[in-house]
Each structure stands twice: as C-alpha cells, then as structure tokens.
Length: 199
Image (tube, rainbow, N blue to C red; front, side, top):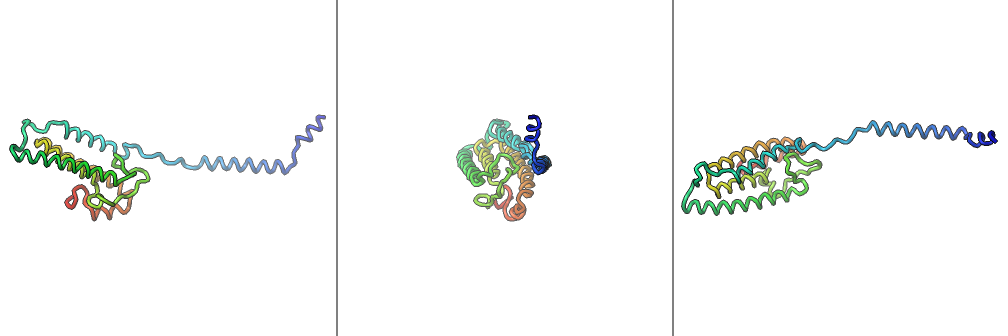
C-alpha cells in the first residue's frame, strides 16, 4: 500500500520542469515590481506658496479692519468726499465682478495657491488677454476702491503694500508658470502683468 501511495505522489519529470519555470517567472515578476520607482508624491501646499496666501489674507484683514487714518479724519470733505465715496462703491462692485469672471475663466485650474495645480492647463483667453493676473488686478482695484470709500491715509498705505505684495507674489508664481508652460515666456512679452496696458 505504501508503495502505491508513493507511486501516486511521484509526478512526471516534465511536471516538475514546468513548475520550476512558473516559480522562476513569479520571482522575476516580483523583482521587477519591487524595482519600479514609487510615483512621486504631489508637492505640499507650502511648496506651492501657501505662505503667500497667508500674507495676502493678513494684508486684506489689515485693509478692511485696520485703522484707516491716524487722526480719524477723512482726506477730503464736502461734495468731493461724497462723490468719491460712491465712486469707491461702484469700483468696489466692479472689481468683485472682474475677479469673479477671471476666476471662472480659469475653470479647473483655479487654486488659492500661486503654484500651478498638477495637470493644469495654460489659460490665455478672456480677461487673461488683457492682463496676466486679472484676479490680482481685481484685488488691487478693490483695495483702491476701499481707499476711496474710507478716504484715510493709512488705507492708501495699505493699498501700496498690497500692490507691492502682488508684484512679488506674481514674480514667484511666474517662475513656476514658465517652468510648467514653455509658451508662457512669449505670453509675458505681449501682455502686462498686473495693470492692463501699464505694468
């Protein structure tokens, strides 16, 4: 009986040869999978400029909630102050609409961070034919409108700080954009950065 079991358990030599090749193939496949590099992890929000977003938020808080004047008095009085006040509100509303349209035209490329999103596409249509950073221009216009509303010398200083900040932020952002989109260099030659037709 033991001899019969032994005979049943003994396989043909070809069976062992085929199994050996199968095992070898599996081992090679495992080695190839282990040798494949891991996909790169997406850059962190700080690597894409989160610090700029934080500074921008602080500047806007200062603009809207900080003191507008050292003396508490407006720069202008009388009818001039009245007309500038309403002009400011018109400009304020226009700037919000302008920035909103610019954000809409970015579509899925829209991000609060200056660094472009992975897989972003180059947008050159609509308001981006007038100025390279229309959202920034809208915020600058909004801050100037707030100066016309408050008419304080400190608010005017905040406007200057915001403009300088966006100039610095856009320079860093465009370093990333040129790297991501080679055609961006040509775009820079034909479209102004922050102020249409001016700067």
